[in-house]
Image 1 (cartoon, one colour):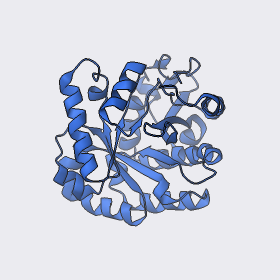
Image 2 (cartoon, helix red, strand yellow):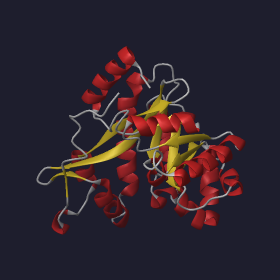
Image 3 (cartoon, helix red, strand yellow):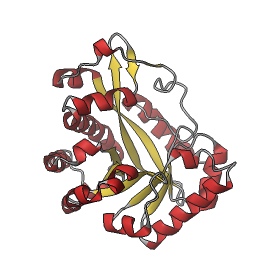
Length: 274
């Protein structure tokens, strides 16, 4: 299942002028939307779930990359509203594929949002509204941020677990977390950083780092995800190394509802041929 040529995000992203960088709650509702990227179980070759991404289609400047607007939302104290808005749209898209309540939805969490305990209450309410179990939601947070400020994040990690949410350590391999660190966080999933995954086929060091992560995860009953899988060779290597999950443009890009529906029809017909 290869990248859809109709997905606009990778090739048509523009730089946002400083004069257009002011956000508001109204603008979030009008111009921001969710896109879902499929995540595949490499053992069963079945759909494991999706990751939700924020997309900003500016009426004048076109698609604005998340790297440009996330920090703006954080500075303007709108990151919680943005995340909840996108998650709600993502849950609406997620529902038709979740008939057996067995899929997961991954959500990237800003360190700013993660420090607000009220966010977990609001997220739990959204799950109740759309009939999603909290244990179907995986909150992704950066390894480097949490490891550097673990004493600050520990009570918030505990609170997220109390609400029933699962936790994933994103960008794994960038901050040298140990098995003890990960055990303290009660992690459901380690997501290998793209700087490791994209060199699977050509770097022995990258493969060794992946194998070390898989060993740590196995000892803690956690899963390992290969992110940013862009071609069949990388996917084959992820399977050979023993990664549990994979996502990336080769398997399916982030998609809006119509495109996702077509991807899912193709998936049901063909599954995956690796």
